View (cartoon, rainbow, N blue to C red):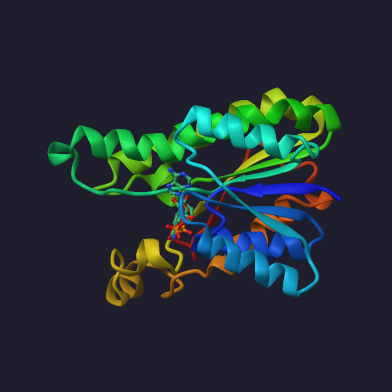
Length: 239
Ligand code: NAD
């Protein structure tokens, strides 16, 4: 049975991803930062359907915490599907942005990707089959007013995706980025009011976490073996 790790698996999009990957037959590590309750709930839901999952908690911004947690996971074998989904935003126009706001957002969205991915790659390479799926954002493709830190981190993820795809191609490992637009959930409810969505999203609605998760499940499948180094939007025709 192939094993997957979904960082931020207890969040809105992450939990939908965990459920769909488990349904497609993978063992799924549902990752949470500090708070395992939500991740426990997702794991129970997955097990209730007869699929397999477990909770893992660590702070992806701590190199040491990542290496320790990954060491434990790898005792049971390689992770072959890695979904780098954990992310935060902390918005301000650049002229008024605190140094901490810049660093924190880069730390979680970009440095976290680096620590986790690096720690899991060697064993994945040894299996000669793998999938790395990075949750970028439309803001990383187009930019977004008030999100220079977030856009920089998400654009950085796209650059890393394209480079890593080339490094891994001969090992049968694909590396892709997903760039969601406005997806319903905690991250967007306060930021994008209904009127804004009607005026700015051609489909006049937010996407659902399930609609992002379906793409993750496809990219993680054997059917997507020749898709690598791509940035795929899920945005209701916003770009
Ligand atoms: P969410 O806030 O529901 O989930 C984010 C997850 O990241 C949480 O589980 C949280 O625990 C985890 N996380 C945060 N800091 C962490 C840390 N230091 N260590 C470990 N985990 C940490 O957000 P979401 O809407 O589900 O977003 C998931 C991903 O999709 C994010 O990367 C986000 O940037 C991206 N995204 C979301 C949208 C959207 O509209 N919701 C749009 C574009 C991109």
